[in-house]
Image 1 (cartoon, rainbow, N blue to C red):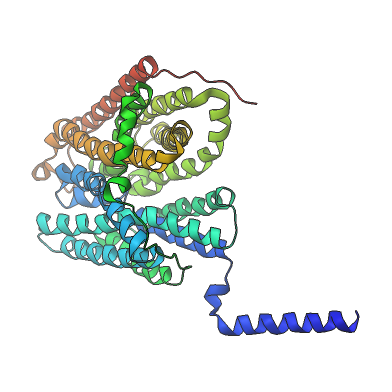
Image 2: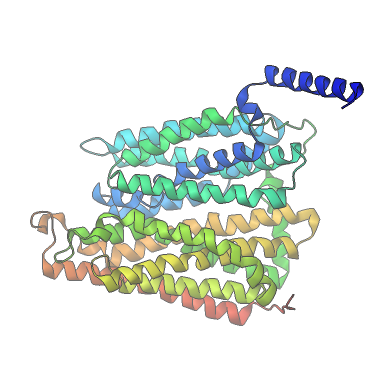
Length: 460
């Protein structure tokens, strides 16, 4: 090494020392790791209660109102992400607004938990706090994506290549939060909401350490643009109109098992002949297999889309929903065969969800003009997670009220267990409800195969 090289090396070391001395350690962490932690916590907040909340609500005497708690997520998704997105674009940096939203969502979720802990639960106060919490949480899903994309671009990293592995850890966080709720025995109590609130506060503080996402004073984005209303012109095209309508119909299936699979499985613990079974007492852990399947099925989408095209892939999703609901109708958590049928239902969820939700988003991206591509994605989200989820949750509640809840009468329980005759009525009611949902999915699949016109050219 000559003198010039030695001087250059010493200068480089000095520059590194100055940088290290001037920046906190958390800013020097690899950006991918920092965004992975963010995604992990983002979905852990949701996973702490989303699939187990129905178990607590049923035990609190609100079995006939579970659908409203899941429908409200759809209603707030119609406008809150757009409003919060405009604020992030114009006035408040996305990473700070993300933290603020999590603080507010956590505060209202803690309020819901407090009301849920009372000896006599006030439904109005409980539901109001929960609604305000999800109103601030739902926009954070889009905000967290925006923060991740900005952080990666600031480091000159390819978002298409780098983001998916980061996002997968969001699902991992969701699953681990579900397991914690299950094995810590939070699933049947208000404690799951306190757990979610604590995670939300931790994430809120963490968000303020994330890379800055500059606002744009010149941003002209309006509420009309943010809601994707300009892209509703796509409904003039028969193919796209058909696709969006069926997206809404498929979206109706999304929240059904989130809201009712947990109460269905855990409810066996109160039926004569089924009490004490492992499956009934670990419903949330059993349902978590759905999310594990989801992470694996994502990897299959590129192959299936190239080989079979969007129409066949979405038909696979629709038929998977038929199997998902049908297997729930014949399964139970108390026998080896019954548990295997439930496990099969959970595994098939990956195809049912991913082959519709992710493949549909890719199809919209490919089929729309670049000038309205983002707006078209907004329409897709409105139809699925907005209208579809809200209508589906309320419709499912009506079906379950008519077939299942009509038989629930705590005054007829003996030592906390329904007698054999009443147990059979409740079990048959659940089976009939799942078969109704399966029949709905089958009708949607047949109509989609007939009405949606699409010619695919296979790719190698």
